[in-house]
Length: 148
Image 1 (cartoon, rainbow, N blue to C red):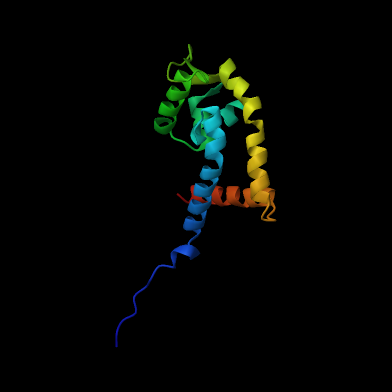
Image 2: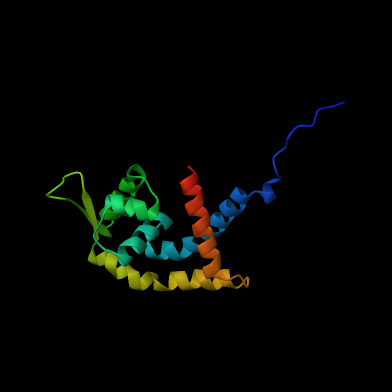
């Protein structure tokens, strides 16, 4: 008698693939709108965090965005070169760097205002409660981070 081997669930039944696929679709939806502003999606996320609370340390931004400083620092450098933000070392602790919006970065907030609305409109056409879905995904992400 032949032994049965364990097999993985099919791709379309994998939660990781559903999240990956949704993330890709979201990126494709955002890309043209962000391109018009000269932004990448990660740059947009940094700006969202700074529009909400300006003058954050790199460490605080990393916590908010769930990014390590070795990922965040090159992104911030490119954004500084594009005059969207400025980075300043703390005089009290030279290891601490504060990130603040420039006038150019601040001005993009108004131009980017409708992006979130457009995304919500497309997403809510499915009849899904977007707020509830977002809360469920956030809770899942929190549990997954805690499990690492």
